[in-house]
Length: 155
Image (cartoon, rainbow, N blue to C red):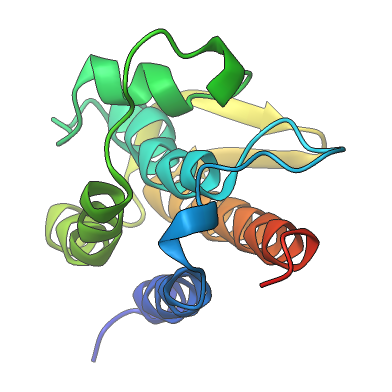
């Protein structure tokens, strides 16, 4: 049986993809008043966070280019983009594939200590399991933001 953290990861990703599938493609790049980012950015940010936080902190090779990460890393926003970002379809495909990639990379390694401990307030990320757990929380936040964007766009 798969570890519970992987089941949580799958559950969260299914939810995120369900939310994204309910959005019309015409609005994914609209930044509503009161927001800094759009649905496309949030979806790309979810994919990129696993690369930036999990793969980068374990030293494992990720799947995303530096250019992809640069579009969606924390602190960025679509109004700063100088080039065309990855397409919505490309991001959805990456989201669909990423969970199994994470599982195949880290199955049997959940208790492995990451080289540099990370503190987020009182939460300490010391192991691969901790990092995946944080990423699940982070994805849930952005899935909620996508829902808020969706509603503000009348979807």
